[in-house]
Image (cartoon, rainbow, N blue to C red):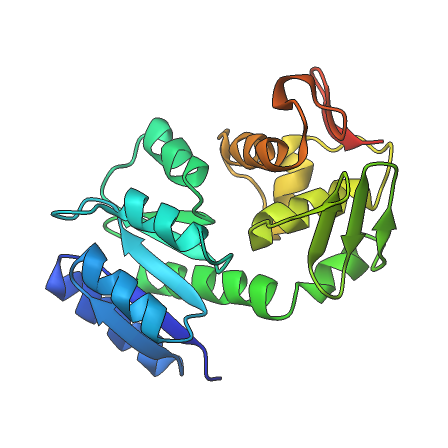
Length: 232
């Protein structure tokens, strides 16, 4: 294992704690206490995943996440003491792949890191088998190249985060099949959605913003009211 994880948190004790657990699991770590310093480390290193605090002096984690997203689709996990549903939705809407609330269990955080890295570094091949397909998708407006993680919409390549890719691939590789938010969460995150939340809805909204000509009148990802979502 040689993945390098970027940890950015203005609380030195938390940053050190996360580093200890990451190193013990075999990861390399680059650590910063400010977003500006973290962005410099991101530019200078081959970062596989970033763990960002949201509330930091100067540039906050949300803005840092946006800056990273301009250049990379690496998994981003927010660490935050802000625990309301709206905080989580805002974090995901700004490009994060996961959101962990402080105080957190280091074991849970490590599990989420491994899950995100599996999805990103191996293109999540296991999900293809579990979802009953591991093939390219060619549709009227949409082409997905599974092996290269390439998405082409209306003739133009679109960059998706790993989770966005998995959600779109799940739906597009089963045209016409309707998936509830619970189904999508189970298939993509590989765990049960234990409480009602808007995680899937936020990701669907972000995917639509990237692939639809008019996200308010979606032609690719369609809503089946009261049931879920489908492609085709």
